[in-house]
Length: 381
Image (cartoon, rainbow, N blue to C red; front, side, top):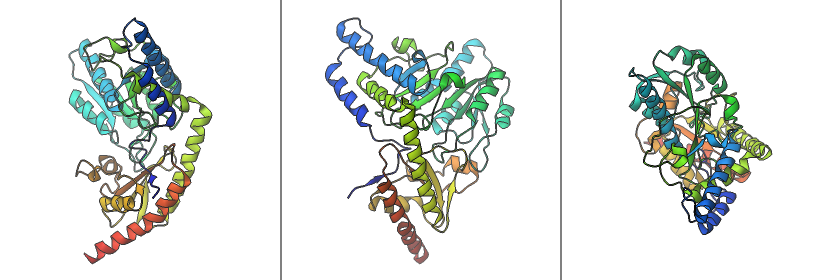
């Protein structure tokens, strides 16, 4: 049975361009890119080419790109670095501003490194710029705002937040893990200080990511011990994996290709929304106007998310719940709670570069029957 993979927001399959580049690199590159012998210099050239490719994707200078093991590390480096930078200058308390729908990596790093003010969002999951500014205090070291939400896809007013914070001299970190490779990003033009991204969400290999650092900004490194990444991140770089990340980024750095994939994703998620609307007791979450192209989140009355996911899986459809209760934790989704919607019964569906219309067909065929059977079981219990 051909399966429909609709969980690209969690991780996207490796693009063939990335796979081929990695295989070639694993065969041909053996040296430490920090050495001056021929093997090391060959690895250095490959590493810097990958850096240029990632920079081109997000509209940044190559020197701004610090390679990491993924978005989680990049976020940690951004949050901890902003806090430590402030502590090195002054012993005053450290204060972060985060929106109520930020990823747990942002929230937990902020809580670990200082005091935190959480800015509320509207029912669509969008933060108001004035509320962000009102939360800034005399000891605020950074404002953290995601480009687009990982559960409902809502896009935040990033440019407005960045511009307003720059006027106040406050650093801004943008979590672009869901946005990179989905929408155009121009880091230098945006004016943000820090931006984190993930490799595996855009079709690169797992274990890769990057932190973008504005030119002229110096933040202490999270990982120390060596002078790799211009002394901004210690540890031997996984050159073959980063070559794969660069190859995936190069595909999407073509504006035409990026737009084609985004347009196809919008068409597919619009079909999904239409199908969801035809099922009684189903409501979609997030902003209808400000949203990422690839992600749909819906609440389903009367059924538990685990049952829906298992039913879809049996029908050959891979999906996820917007609530973390279906994965590692039994807690409801803090994102959906912050939006004031049902945080216990949700379904997240996300498309990507490998999604075809037949995948959406399979979902739309399987979901109504799955929900109906689960409701019958619940009624008879």
